[in-house]
Length: 192
Length: 192
DNA sequence: CGTAAATCATTAGGAGGTTAACTAATTCAG
DNA sequence: CTGAATTAGTTAACCTCCTAATGATTTACG
Image (tube, rainbow over all chains, first blue to last red; front, side):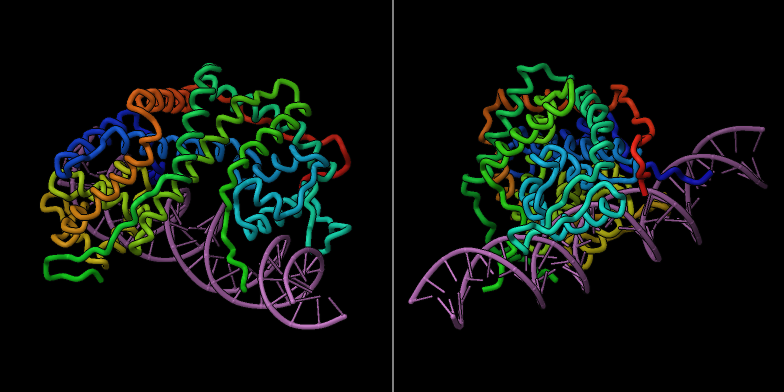
């Protein structure tokens, strides 16, 4: 039989190996903050899992998580419609990306492009009747699954989590991180 | 002047708009768990910020976060060397990806490929002398920045965070999520 | 043994995102 | 009013990762 090529295997003790590696590395460097690095890696791993989770949910239909995000944004908007650039800002995604996503949704018949009446630079994306119907059907199921997932934490913990994340993001914006200087190797080889 | 095309703008009140949108959406669906969805989106946003953070750090040199991960894995390994597939398992990344990353690192002179003496299927990647020198110079600076970031949380909070993440990931593995049925629109249009 | 199954690295091709560059429309300064 | 700067949407080129498929090697087992 051909190899299933199952992709990244979500091993349960994967994080133990990680920790062991970090400990080894910490012996090679002074002042190696294992806890900080471990937390950062944990976050990245979870976010990768999260992407896989949502992608799997989306793959039932032919659309990707990017498309879902656009649909959600429109569904949550006042008139089920937003300007394309507005969507980009809302989802923190570049405009060329939005263009492509809308293209797909339009050809699926879920969204329509409308010229803005006042500002002729703007193009409005709006859920079609079909798109709205779909979202009314889809969203509750999706939310149920998200709740099932986040139900691993109680309300208090959810609040704590959100708060910690808020502080981390704030720190990312404001802290002054030191740029790396230029690497001047002492040995013979110079970097390509 | 040409548009700077600054990309996704990390607005500070971006999350307020998000929350407002979620509230609007919750009025359109019954049993809409705003807290859960908000927490999930927070996580995804932070992880995106995190990627940007690391990418910016890496961009000082010409390498990407994928390359950095490989270098870190090798640096943390016993003989500064690992089999390619081993790296893939360690980083939870597919083997074709590792092949490409190693290609780049080899042509940068940081890593070398070595045939495994016993198992001729295996290829070992090892930090070159130059690569080791680079990592001894690079890693402490990088860790310092990571510590600066994670310093937004104290040791206790870091532990809590790691624990919550552990539970979320566990839930993702074990919980039984409901697959979506097939969408049967009631109106005239059928999805493309 | 000797054949089937599994594992390894690589290649080719595709999905999803980015930056850079371009045109059109609007806003702002003088 | 007019010219410069900004904002929108699109296109093209690229990057990073993925899946699928292939050839080489090793392991499992009848």
